[in-house]
Image (tube, rainbow, N blue to C red; front, side, top):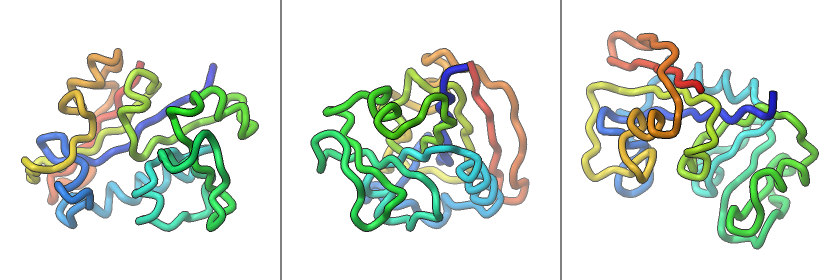
Length: 175
């Protein structure tokens, strides 16, 4: 099978991943989801995220591909030997994988979801059903993640209640 591209997000009930200022509010964080999320990132060969996420969250020893317009194509992060800056406008994803020496990696996408909207092979969508962020930043520009994933050809393949007290569920979407 060719490489796997698996998205990972926790969203408010209205499909937002952050407050209007771009920061994740404390009430959108959940310990059960965080542990599951970190375990999934540990299993990936490569983690893709945006520049702001890279700057806000120190690397825990994982290979990172950081989407940014601050480079022309690819560039090593001088502050993190495991991170590479990538400009999606300057180089396509297959070229990036080849340049980094990957043939069939498991890629975890932990931000910049719109870049992979039609390419996800799976998506793990955690939802906190008691949080609304009406002015927040959407997970996908095209709409609520459930609608966008379905329109992109993914189907809900499993559901679990991660934290019954905090009303956090996880739906795994697959092709």
